[in-house]
Image 1 (cartoon, helix red, strand yellow):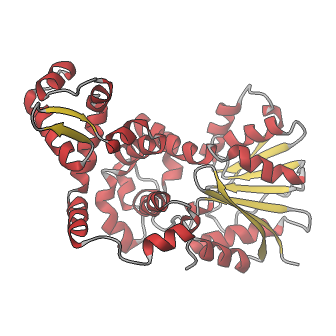
Image 2 (cartoon, rainbow, N blue to C red; image 1 turned 135 degrees about the horizontal axis):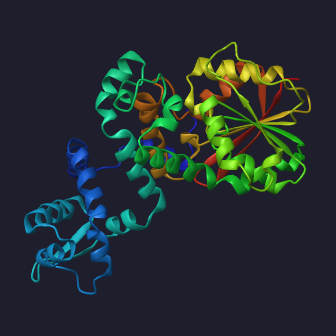
Image 3 (cartoon, rainbow, N blue to C red; image 1 turned 90 degrees about the vertical axis):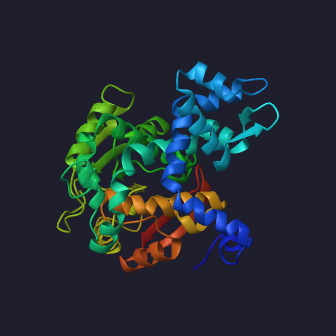
Length: 366
């Protein structure tokens, strides 16, 4: 496994003392409680009150300002003290915000992840064991009877849908500007956006290049949402759609026109290895020597920071329990192997885009 220098340093040797390791083990044991207590400190506005106070606040003052009972505040504050999101002055018994609490309030990625895990994953994750042993998204039945979450996206409860799309868009949108520069360096006139979802990337493309035409290829439900989201917006007349279920190995890529570029952003991580191989093989059939296929993924082994790799490997378990039961956030070695098995080769890799994305630029094998 070829880890980035930061990850090799973090993951190849033991770094914790015995006391630190024991504390982390208890953190794991109480993880669900830590999560919910911290989420409620945000929801009830307690962390905000502490941030905005000049001298900190007592238990009574927090209760008065939030409308919570003294009992509720005391339970949350004492738990948060041990979690490490707040601090206390033993003499005055006034609580203040700790650095970790500050990040809970202010770090956009953390807020997106909290909402995603509460609204989408939390209850379904109880069925992770079943998902791992059976290869099905066993936790998804919490929401509906669909075989994967993608068929049910448009039917999710409003909060779950909102948090799912916020999570998806947060990690992709941060990379769009740099990604546009990579893709349009070759000046494509036609682009096939595979797994285009709500059309956010397609709109970025038609705004970036006033001559390009984009075809969004996705499931029928997503295509319908895409049409609604792009209707009437600048350049939307240059956005077409092709409804297709790529899980069906008989589904071919469109051949109604020649595509200079094929784009797959945060798409292949939604599939198992044999499915990825099949999708790439079908993409290769409509490619010629001038076509380039761009894959943008958050490859966990190429991350600059340990925290990013942590978030990505945890996201793999979302795919297991909730999304489809058989996909994950891939590492470079696995993805490149599948690319080669599909008859394609990597021409270039662009790293460190946005929130830790990489773009693999592919061509058909010579």
